[in-house]
Length: 209
Image 1: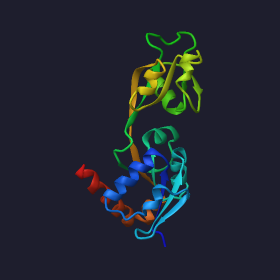
Image 2: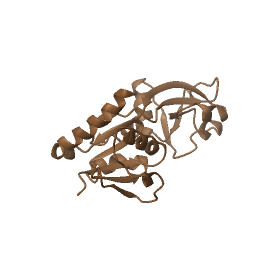
Image 3: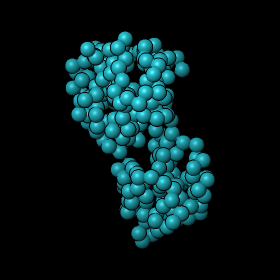
Image 4: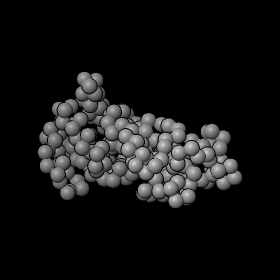
């Protein structure tokens, strides 16, 4: 029987988390990296992995189908799910920032901000005392200022290369982002000892870095 079910995001976060787990001493199957399966077993650790889209991980953890999950801080801030954040894994580091065309000011009458993070963007501008119209987009956020849809965008920035290649500049840094280990509140009570052991093993590896 699996003691823990862990929701893992596909893509870059998964690759970095997998490396962290292995370096921390967890015996994980090598084929998990190349598998097309959505549920993968690690029998030697009595762990079951659910491989999901990054935005879905907190949903699985909140509803208890996964005990533990790995999610970017951006997703946690945006969704505000009922989960406990246990550990900063210090992987997939980036940040959220505002950006737009060079040397441009926000429209005084009807400022518009395009983003796939409406909660984060709304909170940021509200705290600044600025009222803006949020335009929610799901992809190619950089297009918005280029085609006159918005004055600013709020988006993830890693190297800044995408902004530069599209003729945009960063204006304000909002928050640093990294991947976090989250847990279902009920699972944390019921499986507290096992989860604490799991977290301690990861902490030990992170302390070496």
